[in-house]
Length: 431
Image 1 (cartoon, rainbow, N blue to C red):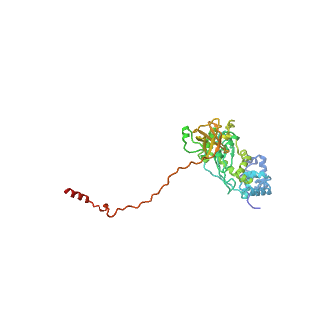
Image 2: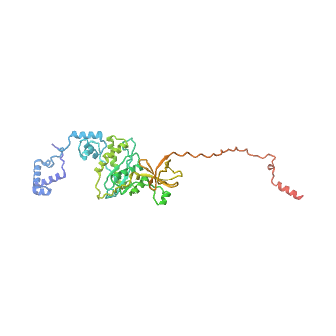
Image 3: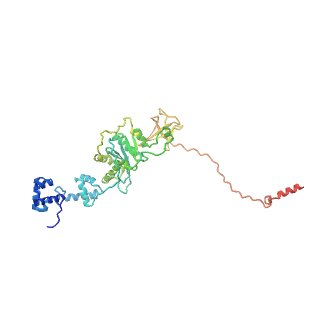
């Protein structure tokens, strides 16, 4: 049969050298040394070349299917399952999900099958050149924190924002879902991190007003020499956690890339589990989703020293993560907070005097505490006092405008002539 024979560069080189043996210019031993083959292998290859011609140099398995290839029925079943359930999944994640369904495949095999079937295409990401920042060496030395607004429950549904914490050295992540990124949510996530791993040395955050504030200091802060801080910042200061501000998203690239992993895998997992609520998403995160991601993507830090500090046993985290404000005691031992009135009861052993300051603390569970000199006071909510009676004000009487006065025609003012008075005076003086 006619046609073209495709040969590799190695096979073409063997053909040239074997022609030298045929022409008598070289021996088999010389050719074997030149090609880097053993004498026996070179002799077998030359024998096939003499018997079969150029086709004897081509590998015998070329054009044949692999003995380890999957059956066509298996391949069609995988592609059909991907089309029905995992459309849009990347090859790596799709291979993991297919393994859960009983189809054990390497992710590169899934990638090739999807590309040939037209369900996947190569994607190249080109970004700006940036200098590489070396990871911190210790677990707990720096924890990056950020939120990600995304359509987690699918298009057309309300967006949510799960803030994340990612350790810079080890890559350990923790997330919590909520409708908006708020101070309460940041406090709850940091508390969960401390209860699980300990108190980190520093947090790396953006410039949101949840973490830092740009307001001017109050008079009390100026007198005390304190910088203005948010409620989250005050809690971090009590724990000895430093807050470092990031000036760009690229600066905290660990947590930004973690957003991409969650937006890819968590969205698809929520779709598979048919979860469409924040409560259900948090249950999924707590039931092992984050732990599975950590087991897959965590890396060993350069140093095995853990920089996390265990909180003291005397420290109550529930009372530490709170909002604090000062109020002044009125003459009737009441204070006003959030437009409600509270009575300091007489049974307190240490009772403040009127005009003194007390600390009002609101915890994450919405409970409130009133403290004086570090001690909690007993109090009770009281009704709002009735408004003061307004003073009676005399009604304003509107005066009617009077008609404009006009002098009569015989009025002296109308008969006045310039110089008449001077002439009268002159006549009187001549007499």
